[in-house]
Length: 448
Image (cartoon, rainbow, N blue to C red; front, side, top):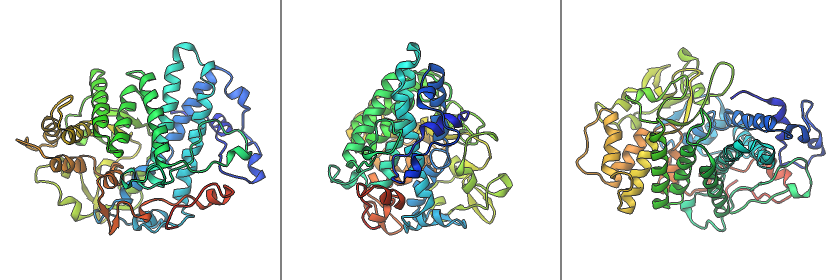
């Protein structure tokens, strides 16, 4: 995911500010009529959107970290000296938290890049227009999904037509005027837009696309959205489509659980992953979860005994944890410069199993077979029958510390560290600079 800084800077105008200083063009800017004037240039901008997606503030780590810290519930601890992640772990975030702010800004910058691409698809070579449009829609839909999960009350809390979500910006922002001050759409409106983006992306994307978004990746992301909305038949069908397309095009579970992590490039289990090298790409999961021996910090996140006690003896997933820097660490993020999986095939089998179980169906395969597929890979014996509780337990262990914790906790209406799933402090504050710059159009979240 090579960087194209000049294009990204030119198209990354933030919608949020009212200061006249922000009307100034960056020194390395390229005029829109140049940046979006040709097939080659639009594709470079698209490459820049992927690069922006790999930022440490987004899928380069922090989106996963935030989810795990928010839902820690005594199973992990933030041991690090940085106060901003500690605030998330303690559910005591300030409206000036720089990590929260930078994730918001990075997401909207990237959304604006996607909006610019979508507005210039007509100059792309005809044979590539569907793919380019599908990739931009996939990135935009995924980012709005991440934003609404962090900055709004969960879908499971109800009142989705009145609870504020996040501002929906669907056209390029190339300057600041009155139209730039956009209020927060409702949770329902944001989810509707996410579904529209990802559904269209699924219809446009190819089955294979090297390290970039594919049809199976879009189906998989849709399954996540439907799961949050508790639309289980839809989640089942989207997961099944992802599995069907992915496995027909060479995707499969890795032979061992450990082999699904610490890979220098994509492996068969990855439906979508961030590419990381010494030259490009971020992996804050390694930075904060690993230790100096492997190029990390001092082991900012430690695994607690209450989490380890959830595994059965002989579970290969338990064997992946290791001791280092005075505590237990997750081996998923041990090694430096390794691809960071965003979507693994294993997740889709578990989503299909759960959704089939809830719907009383066996679309694609039975819940029992899907769960046993995951258990057997982990070295565990097959179950003779399966309950919803069994499926949820397998999901928790299989996907532990990969950024699913807060979303699963909220849709299942659980609690963490004494905070209910729908508590005000389980929602991120809107960055104070956005509230201040919005001229009253962006309302702060309750509790801040």
